[in-house]
Length: 130
Image 1 (tube, rainbow, N blue to C red):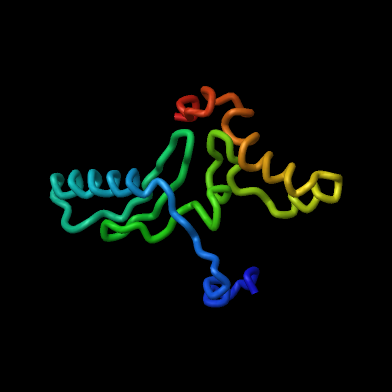
Image 2: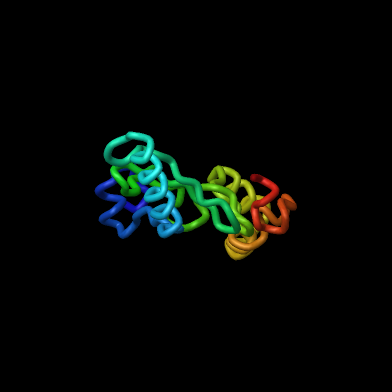
């Protein structure tokens, strides 16, 4: 059952969390570790790296490696982006379907018509948020 809360069953069903912006998070982790050591720290600092732009994500980093990300099975989970909604309450999707929106309309809206652009944050570049 793909919807199972049991992680083993979820993975056996072919689902997993996918991370994006990996090179950005890796670079941030390397720069942070370098600065950490310059200031007398040893090893790698634990940190949350933020990739903010037209695509957005956070990553939890420990020992120089990402251990978690805000992105899920698709880039729709997590932070709002230029054209993507970010995480949304599944109950809202059910409500919208009950009121006539088709799956295709929901998918189009979530992937291409939501995000920064409708909020008018510098035309999807995210600079207005920073």
